[in-house]
Image 1 (cartoon, rainbow, N blue to C red):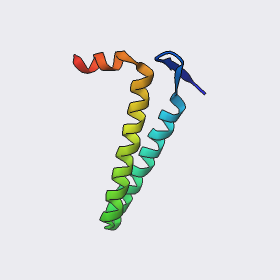
Image 2 (cartoon, helix red, strand yellow):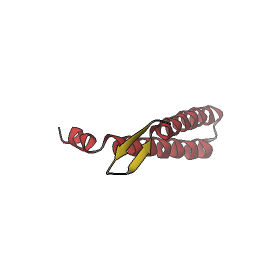
Image 3 (cartoon, rainbow, N blue to C red):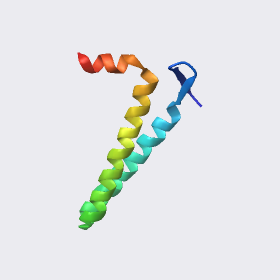
Image 4 (cartoon, rainbow, N blue to C red):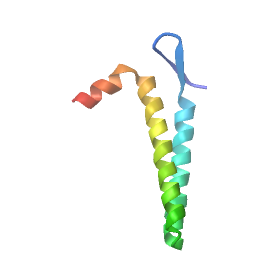
Length: 75
């Protein structure tokens, strides 16, 4: 488990960010396949799930990076 300290004693599990990205990639592939099959409702559901997993990974990385992520957005 790879962790980075943040705000004192809090730690972020970076492996979870990787896991979330794997989930996002899987859901994106499923959404693509559903579009090919004409199952647009299922494709929409999996696209939303992929976005949620991507957002979760981004939030974990922002916490792990601390203030430096916020400064990068200001540039």
